[in-house]
Amino acid sequence: MKHYVSFFKSLTFFTIYLAGLITVIPLGITYIVGVRTLSCVLSFILKNFTIPVIGAVYLHEVAQYLPISSPVEVRIDYKKLAFIWIPQTDIPNQRYIIGWILGFLLPFVFGLLLIEIGYGLTGIIFLIISLSGLRGLWEGAK
Image (cartoon, rainbow, N blue to C red):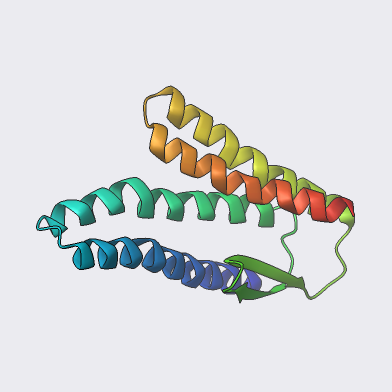
């Protein structure tokens, strides 16, 4: 049970870091440019970028972690904006592959559904996050 708490604590820290980057950088640009309606820009960024990225990252990482469900040490690579897991026990490759497939499929399907019901920008963010699962499959196949 302790490894679940540790995983979600690290995941929350990582998503807060990403949300801060996604929110602060555009706000800084709009402040420098001199847009007068900063609150409008903030609500647009939060609604269309920050919240969907948080949801997509959580969905991707949790779907990827569920088949593994064992103690892992979590590190964050700030340069690559990546969440790196270092298992504390031996884990069969099949569980890794199932995790990568779920990490790709769940955000991908969710993104397609969002696009279908008219939330295109949010759906595209989910599709982009799902590509990380493909990268994991590619690295796992090597």
